[in-house]
Image (cartoon, rainbow, N blue to C red):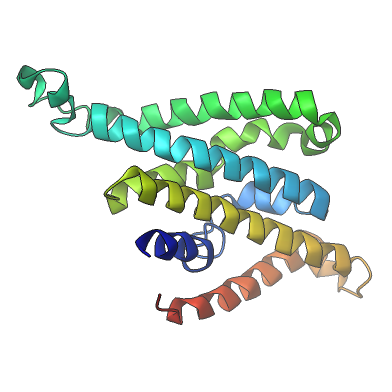
Length: 204
């Protein structure tokens, strides 16, 4: 039940876009079509699903104060937590490089459509935010971390596909010239954020 609670909460209540506004650059730039947005959303979800648990293991068994005690009792006082940020970034960069190669190999059309934004997943603050939130919330085991990572990725996917579907419909709407493009997108994002706030009343 706790796993389900973490999963649902990370999708709807602690949504990376609507609760913390993380990953907004890719969210605004790529969300012009549903197809492209879905592809990027799946890629971000996959990266989160891999990097957050890996970073959890690195943090727990290598970087946290006393984490090296399993190697030798003499290392129990070693604290490498100051390396956590750079290690998290290194893991994310490596996984993103792998995802980029996979997408280029199996879906060249999606690779060309995403363009520069695919390698920019490495600097997508939603991905790094997932690892930092994992560290801050001190989840007790790898199962909770995996549920959080999967939920966060799906939440980001829901957000970008949702705004892309709306933006596709907006092409046929009479929008004031001053609000066309990013302007109306910001307004709709704010309204969607308010809508997602309604989920805060859910108690699982």
